[in-house]
Image 1 (cartoon, rainbow, N blue to C red):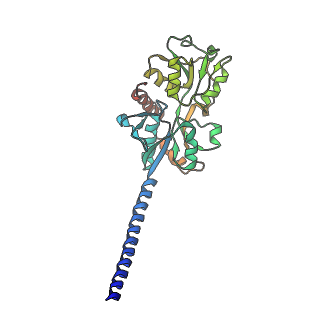
Image 2: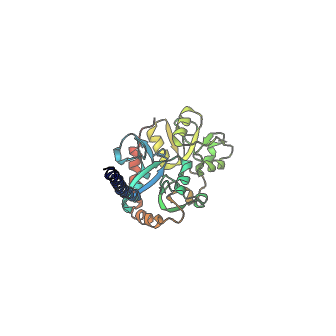
Image 3: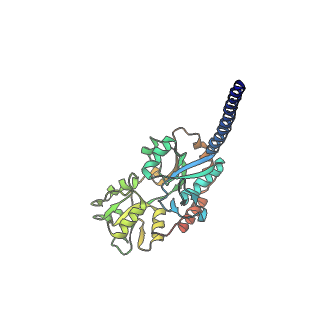
Length: 282
């Protein structure tokens, strides 16, 4: 009787292990499915703080996309371009909100598949990552306070003695040196911070690209965009904007094919809509 009892216990334990093994197989299958699902995502890094290229908002209005790990959404020109690329790749777009300085490291580490953040394909950046073809061309301008003595400037040299800044680790900041006698301020981490500094009078102006300047002046009636007859000297690679991808990535050819199907007229229509839809300045 005791032997039968222990045999019953033994068979019960063996059955539990068999069932546990089956359960592990199911779990592995489910995990495999999850990994496959992850392979079907296109993870894009952006600041979500550089309107009209990209910004953060509280809902999905105007086609905004949910930001990974957040209750907020990302909208803007870059988001619309990212959506078209993701669709062309047959993948689901995932927006990963990342500080500007963290975008290239995030790409290199595999946290994101691409940088679509109003980034110019400069020679320095090309040493670390690859870039696709251009998906927007712009030019440099300044944003100043309405009514200031710099509002009617026609040359960058009119900013002699002015307190001027630009975003950290961008060519915008380096070109300030072209202004003789300028009072070059410390670079700013982001554009919202520069807008606050301009509004409060901490700076007299900041260097930016035309779409952002149009966005700033549209969002805040106290801001004016200044375009120059005698402007900053830049190269094409500085004012062009492209998608950043990992060195040697097979995505380059695929994304270029998708971008080739977005004519300049459509690019401008998307940009105009982004400027119109940007959130009001805080």
